[in-house]
Length: 480
Ligand code: NAD
Image (tube, rainbow, N blue to C red; front, side):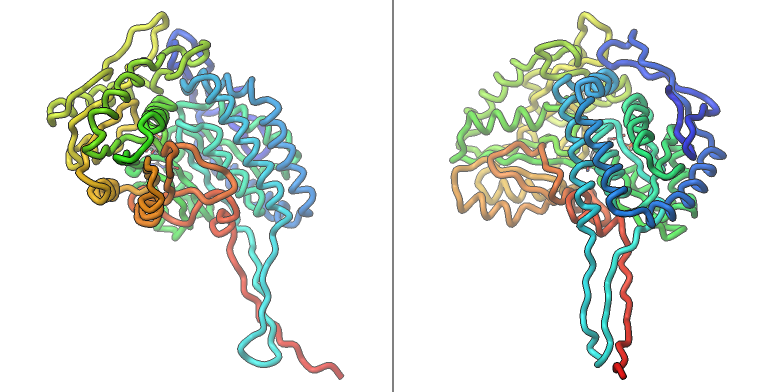
C-alpha cells in the first residue's frame, strides 16, 4: 500500500515516483503516490476537525495510543529497520537502531501526555488568582529530511500528538517506504479520523503548498538551511509558528593531552557513521600541532580500514550515499578540496562494487584551512577535513568560526579544558570525549546560528513549540 493517508483513507495521488535502493539501483522498492493540492486541502480540513476531538480526548486514551505506536515500532524494528536501510543506505544495524529509537520517542511522549501540569499564582492585585495552562497549537505541518527518515519525523509527530495537535506529515521523496510503514502503524492506533495525514510529494510543490497554507498553525522542519530560509519566507506571510533544525559544520577538537586512540575512534565514528550524512557529523577535525602527525597517521589507517558495502550485507560499516545527485556533489567537493590546497590522504572516489550503487570511499583530507569553502559549507558526505591548531585557544576559536552551531566535541584529559570548552563552544550540543554524533531523546536537541531557528526539539522542552500558553485571571470574591 504505497499511498497517501488523508482524512483516514489510503488514497492514490495524481502521479507516482519510483523508489530505488541506493546499494543496488536495480532493486526497485516500489512506486509511491504523490499527493495533489486538492488532497492536501482535504487533509487540512479533516485535521482541523479531528484536532478538536483529540484535544478533548481523555489523557489516558491519548497515552494508550502513543504507547501502542511506540511498542509497535520497537517490536517491528528488525523488519522496518531493514526497509529503512534498503531505501536510505545506512547499514542494517543503524536502520534497526533508528526504528527502535523512534519507538522510544513515542513511549517517552506517551508518558509526557500525563505530565501536562500547569502553573498557578496569586495576582499582584488582591483577591485575584492566576491560572496558566497550555493549549495545543492546532494543526502542525511536519517536514522531514531523508537522512533519518523515521526518527526525525517521529521526534516531531510524537510530541505534536502528545500535546493535543493534529499532524500533516510531508516526508522527503527519497524515503517514502519508511514514511508509509510508519503511517500504517499510526493509522492503526485508533486516533480520531483525520488527526494524522501523510502527504508525499516534492518540496517545491506539495511541500510549498503546505507551508504557505493559512490553515496550518505551526511548521516543524528539519532539512537544509536553504530550504529552511525558503520555508520561513513563505510562512511568515501567515505569521505561522516555526521550528527549524538545519545544516551544520560540526568540529571535533583533538588536544595534545588527548587519548589519541580514543580520539581516532570518535573522529572516525563522527565523520563516517551514517556515511557522513548526519547533521551531527564531524566534518572538521581540529588537531593540536603537538599531536597532528600522530593523530593523522592513525586516523588515516582507521579510515582506510572501513568496509564500504551494501547496506544489508554483514560486515558493512559504511553504506552508499543516498543518491546519484548527492554522490556527484560529494565528488565535486573532493575536487574543490584539492584545488583549495588540501591533501587528499585517502578515498574521495566513486567505488565500483558487486552491485551498481552510489558507493564512495570515505575521504580524509589534511592540511586544510578553516576559511576554505570545504570547511565553511555543509557537505553531508563521508569527507573529513583536518585543520591544524597551535593551541587550545586557537582550536576553540576555529570551532566557533562558522555560521553554524549544532554540535562540537573535544578530546582531552584535562578537566579544565573540558569544562572551558563545554561553556565556550558556541553550539547547541557539546560532547566531551565522545563523537559529535549521538544524542538522547529525553533532553533538548538543537543548534545555534544558521543551524537552528525557533524553540528546541525533544524532551520536555518540546512542549514550548507544540503548545500555546493561556493566562487566566479569576476574581475570588468574598464568601457570604
Ligand atoms: P532538504 O532541505 O532538501 O529537504 C528537507 C525536507 O524539506 C524534504 O521533505 C523536502 O521535500 C522538503 N522541502 C524542500 N523544499 C521545500 C519547500 N519549498 N517547502 C516545503 N518543504 C520543502 O534536506 P534533505 O536533503 O532532505 O536533508 C539533508 C539536510 O537536513 C542537511 O542540511 C542536514 O544537515 C539537515 N538535517 C538537519 C538535522 C538537524 O536536526 N539539525 C537533522 C537531519 C538533517
